[in-house]
Image (cartoon, rainbow, N blue to C red; front, side, top):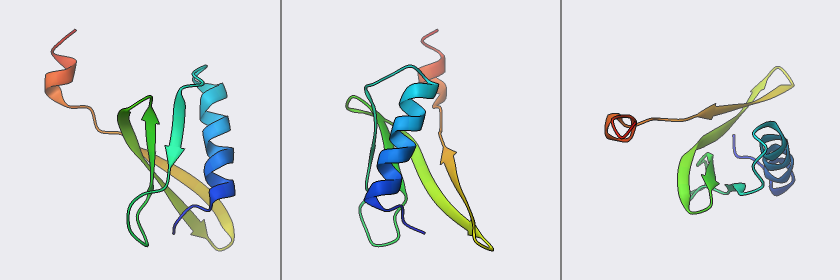
Length: 73
């Protein structure tokens, strides 16, 4: 399921507060059924899917971390 603009704003506000980062933003994915995309500034950090389980809505965030990014630390 695709997130509405209102849902994206609410999820964005929640994540900004949770991670204390006002630069975190949520954008619509490209395509009809594409998940929303999460960014910090210009850096893509993951996707957000909307799930509807018998009327109970949840949002799932998937974030991949590349091994070459981890090796920098």
